[in-house]
Amino acid sequence: MKNLFLSVITGLMLTGAGGIAAPVWSTGELQLANGTLLKGELNYNWKAEIVRYRQGDVVKAYSALQVSNFRYFDTNQNTLRKFVSVLYPFKSKQVRPQFAEECTAGPLTVYRQLRPTREMLKIGNSIATEADPELVKNIDNFEYFVVDGQDIVRLRDFSRTLWPRMCDEFGQALQQYVIKRDLNVNTTLTRLLLINHYNYLKIQAVTEPEEVPSLGR
Image 1 (tube, rainbow, N blue to C red):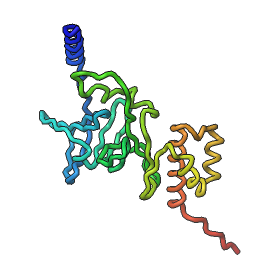
Image 2: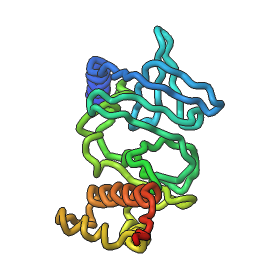
Image 3: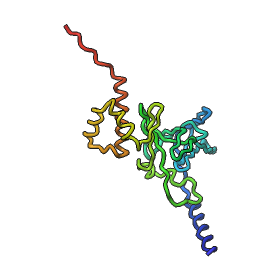
Image 4: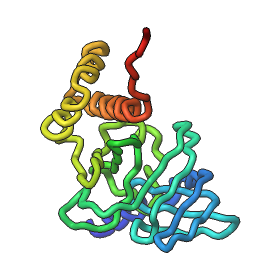
């Protein structure tokens, strides 16, 4: 039995070592906590929350404790990804610096973090799934947080906290947006769309000049 167990473990290690995927490097920039700006190629490990920086033959790895923010162009998704290091207990009550991706910017800014997932241990492959396009495509694989001024609200509390406040300002416009598109306010996608539309309405209200009544003769 002992020999069989050792054989299985050895086989897993060999399989893991042979199946290590090459890291995907993307052009970007990284700002350290001390203000230093690094430009080159970046590789972000979604699971381990480690960003690696490469310039020439030099490769360095950084955690959220060492980084202020970073960004890179994701050719897989054809989008610019922006990440910040924030102090917030995303996955536990422990407050420590963690990376969060910005997915909507504006008066209400939305950030997201990958949900913890249960999966088989990939021995010898520390970067497995870090560039999994299907993992990143599914919006339900993430936990979302909304920054409203000095407050941070979980998207799961949207109906109880954010939605009433948004409707106080632009209730009619937002309700029409929901009805016209036949949206379900309880889905993650709809909530993100509504926040994006709210940001648009908020910015338009500030930038558009007020109508001046005509003083015709």
